[in-house]
Every structure is written in C-alpha cells, then in structure tokens.
Image 1 (cartoon, one colour):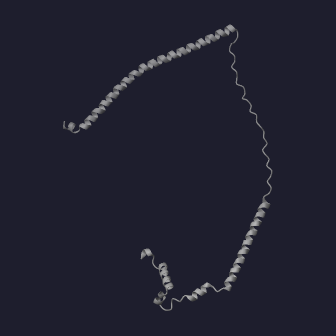
Image 2 (cartoon, rainbow, N blue to C red):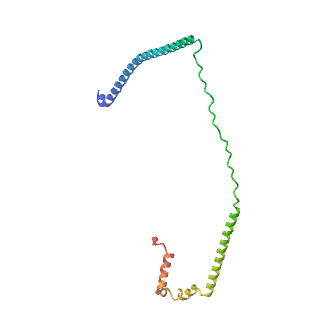
Image 3 (cartoon, rainbow, N blue to C red):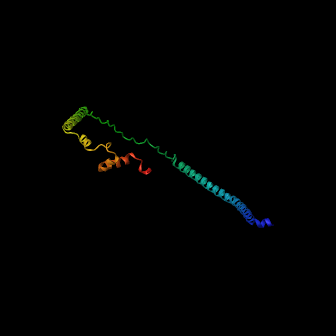
Length: 186
C-alpha cells in the first residue's frame, strides 16, 4: 500500500492508458458494426443503378430495332470518317546568296605600315633627344662633382666636429633611423 501512495503518478498514468485502450476498443467495435450496414446500403444502391442502366440500354435497343423495321432499311448512317489532315503549303525559299567580301588584306597592310612608320618616327625622335641630352651634359660640369667638393669629408675631424654642422647632424639622424633598430623594438 505504501508503494501505491509513493508512486501515485505511475498508478494514474497506467489507469489513464488502460481507460484510453478500452475507449478505443469500444469505438472500433462500433465502427465495425456500422460499415456492414453502409456496405449493404451501398451494394443495394449500386445494384439499383446498374439495373436502371441495363434497362435503359435495352429500351434504346428496342426503339432502334422498331425504327429499323418500320423504315425498311438500316436507319443507322455510318459515322463520317475523319478525312486526312489539311495540307499545309510549304514555301521553298532559296537560301540567300552572300557575295564574297572584298579582301581586307590591303587595308590591314596599309594600317600596319602606317603604324610602323609612326613608331619609327618616335624612335628617331627619342634618339635625337638622347643625343642632345648627352651633348648638353658634356658641355656643363655635373652637379655631383660640385656637391662632392662642397660637402666636407666626415672621416677627418671626428664625430663632434661633424655634428657641429647642421647638414651633418641631419644626415646622422636619418642614418640612425634607417640603419638602426626598428622603432618598435627600442
């Protein structure tokens, strides 16, 4: 008895399942009884419809035979047979004749020759410009030689003497930035 009170939830679930099963079984028995009545009713209605159809066919056949005998011949006119399908006229069209195109070779050749002539002129102009530049360079003293002569040599007087000059100091800072350790690692 203690087990039932301790596990009341299981007892209720089992009772509900049993009640559901009984209810379903009862409904199934009711449904099994109804279809036999419905089947009988359906069979009777189908038989009545078939008999009515059969009676209609027999009446039509009797009427046809009566009209056949009274007219003395066969009243049935043969059904018209479908004729051949109408012919669709087809047009025979000759394919269009294309005249051969004029050869494009001379146009291509002339365009190619014109382009080559322009390129040749550009090359000649570039060569002339280069020659002029060389002549001008030979006539004037180069800036590099001038600059090298004006800047004092760094190796001479020592580091302190070199850093007295503003340009040398600037050069030292730039060299340290470029050649020294990266800023992120300092």
